[in-house]
Image 1: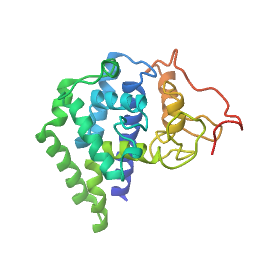
Image 2: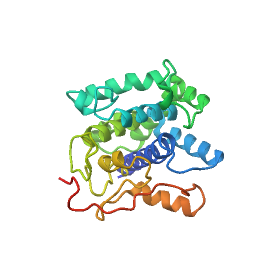
Image 3: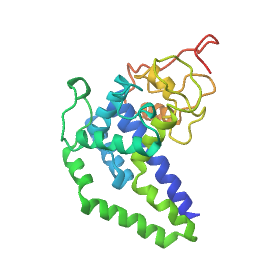
Length: 256
């Protein structure tokens, strides 16, 4: 029971921070926050994602490229360009590393305006820090695992961040229904996205990239947006001027 709770908490917190901080804030600036809160969520994302921490700069550049070149040969992570999930992950990692580790410079339009904390990136990429965090996961499992099969979950903690991104970009461009014709193959995989905190509303998001609400139809539920609204009420983030989706999808829309 302890292992199950730990795994679910790690999964949900990791994907929430990826959606809330790296994606909606870092890549799109769908809302604003103070420098202090930005540093807080940046550090929290690192502590939660651990060895699989995704550089905010690397993530933002890659994601902006994804929107600009969605499902074309220049898309850094589209299932249209790969035969399986794993080859897409490896190809994405290569491109991500070039920007996260500052080995290459992106097109100017994809750079700037994202959280950038070089010292934290260096810490997250250091092997002593990775080994320390990985040792915590291993120790936790040895302390609380009650069945051998539970150790099959352990490797997933080490790749949590990239795994979430790969699930979203593979499933969100392969399985589900479409509300809009965006000129790509993006789809909405779940109507209540409890699995990836709203990220699997890919079709809606590709239509309205600057909206912090990824749900469009009355039956669609985006859990991250619910938290965003609470954080807005508390004054932790500022949603003033946010382009929140408020529209109806009519029967004539491209819904499948």
